[in-house]
Image (cartoon, rainbow, N blue to C red; front, side, top):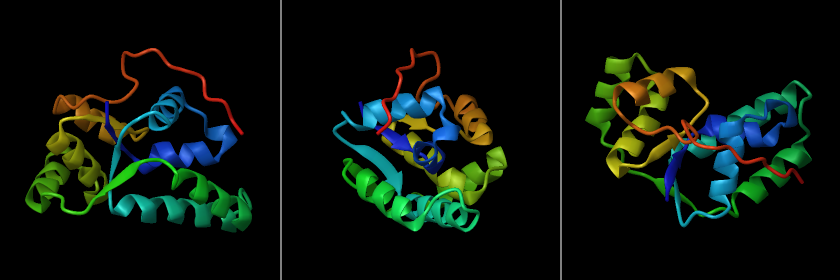
Length: 145
């Protein structure tokens, strides 16, 4: 079953010290899913985190390039047309950033789970009955390269 992938999950895949059972589950699922949905800002958020971590010395440019090459192999479908009025409504209702509200809106519109580690976004999902990947489910263990 498809789901919406938040950048917080994908970022955790790049750093060994940021393991999380929900990220492990999402990685297992993304390797086997027909389609994973992301808003267009996903790729910018992901690259921004990687570049910031390069500046702090946590990752090298070559590692960033390899990670982006690996993640590009997954069947990630970019959603280009969010319901902008709904995004604003959700941001206001849940006091989310507009960036986070885009992920919530996409999960709601597609009627699929959201994979995220963001606490405010998880709380918003619970209020709006949007499933969060990993809640109440058994977790698998990711095998690192």
